Image 1 (cartoon, rainbow, N blue to C red):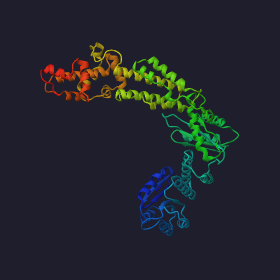
Image 2: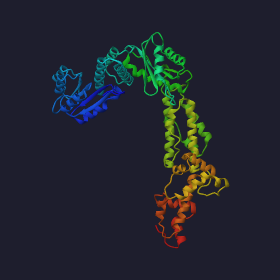
Image 3: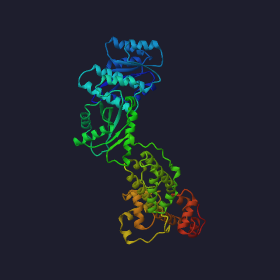
Length: 534
């Protein structure tokens, strides 16, 4: 049953379907190099699966119909099958546990299951199986197990200290459970694959005289755990840079975590190293960031201290200069120390943007520029980029609001068409689409899609070319459609109102009067010489 990515096989057996599914989903089986070959719901089915597949191990409930877990183990042993067993039980009984151990069970776990205990039992079983086997295949599997364990160590998912001793005793990892620290090499290149194996070999050679281990973690990291030595952590980070540079390999950002007392605390050192790297926001010339750089002074400025209403007014008035000034002053106020925690800067900027976004979303019925996405903020790596992004985003929003709603100039007017406008194929195509679909409740996105432009760029383009706000033009077209429709004496005013997107008569009547100087009812009565049809 072995494949390129799996090395061991296993079955799960429990008469409770919910427990069986919980077992199936509780463990990253592929990450441990394990293939589940059968899920069994009774003892006879479990025994049949063992006879058919000869799995490396089975996780089996002690109480099941037909045959219980102990009977399955007995029959398996009589047949000379070497499957290892992990017993599950809802009974905290010494006699059950004694019987399970007597027949060679690797572990006796009580329900409800603790996922960490389950993982530890499976890991020990896998490690034992790999030790029993020989050859390159087994060596590769042990390496896979080691990496899985180390990744869980960084994620603080190893809860038993004795697991660390077992790992170090049964593997060739050259670190000890003594004072150590984590070094993170972070790569951000996404345009081409990185030679991680070559990088790790390069680092291993450089630190061959020290207790260490380097491995690939996630998609873009190489993580190292180094025991303390005569070399300071920062000096070792420089050694990493030097070794990589000599091999002409891509250079990473390097974060150094705190020295901790043992391997169980590596998760803390790892997270501190990652946090240190975020301080490249202020200066990334050296490429090395140690935990000493982390700011410990609490910020005093809260978002509630910021009066954002002036920014709203600047956006509405299309006052781009004051928008830029407001953004610069806002960033300056965040720098209560020369290098505040980057997550504080990001969160404050995100919150301000979100408040402004909410302000205009409620006003503009969700039609704000889709290109301005606050999540883009977290992709920036320099403070100068954040300043620029904030200024540009709010200025872009201001231009969009002006192009669509236009708070300056006359409203509800249809200026004469200029020659330049009549020759513009984009404008003509947009107007034609609006005219043909005026009763389809079209949105700016629909029009922009027809001319292959983004909604915000199209709105600004339309305003620049026609000197009329897009909303005003749409309103004029709708009211022109309504005027023509109401000249038919059999037309219902409510039906016309609904056709062009008005949910109630009052709003429609107000808009119609603003454009034509008369209410729809009076207009129909005047032009048809009969009582208006509501």
